[in-house]
Image (cartoon, rainbow, N blue to C red; front, top):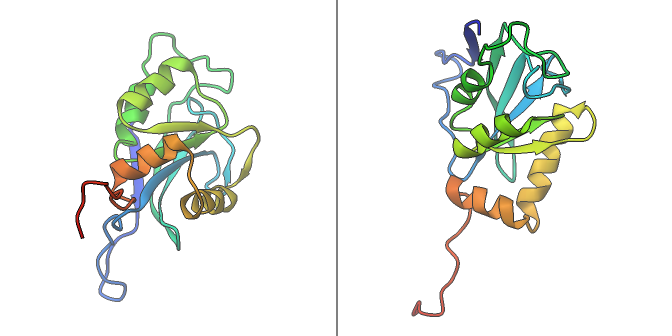
Length: 165
């Protein structure tokens, strides 16, 4: 697989240093071909837009680009090349990955890296994905997301019957 390129915001005197992940923010990766829409399968994604998402806001962290990808059918250009591991390594630190499709071995590698893959049935704008993620954070998240939120430090400690006031 070709080299991985990362594009991130650079600090300067006017804007100050790059913010670290806000406490409780989810780091979300979105498979994209054009940096505008979620419109790629995991294996064929040329880019991943990475955002920090909280209940109130989101911010672009970086764009991760790949030169050598699978086609939309999942076939590699040269059999035997491992195109999955470099992508998983590049996305480490993300909590969620949104994509149009993902194969079983890729999903297993992501899950073992503590990245939860989410398949979306059709292309949609990155903004729609981020808004929907915020709605999930604001409302009653499903159990799998509560677990991810706990690992990200985004949930308050649950009260215990043994706690004394």
